[in-house]
Length: 172
Image (spheres, rainbow, N blue to C red):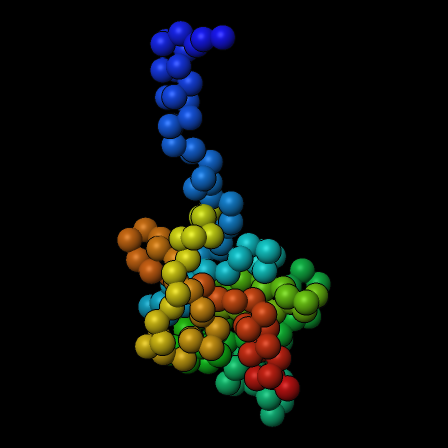
């Protein structure tokens, strides 16, 4: 049994061709800005983007990490300051023009409203696109383990479990 030269050449080209699905963008991230810093969370941790709600202070508790409580679609949620949690400066009270959106972050069935300055949306990426974060990152290192390249800048990848633990510890 012999294979003609043309069939052998075609088979060789098929086998030698690069596999395009190797770098399929299989993960998705929700990208947003807080102050001057850009961050990303897995889309599974972001329920929605909402307009800022009225934030009501909690006596003897509001002002730092806990900005207060808010009504989001009929549910009372804690409103959390990401700048206070991450140690990156301030976006101000959620009803100022600085903070024009809120991210509804839900993890372990617990929703939290996070005021943010800007929302870029959802981006797809390959898991290998995440690179380890340097130890020189400011206070966000406790929550940022990796960086993701997006639109020519490096975006801090926030780990939902770490973010949740930091919020719970901070408001306890």
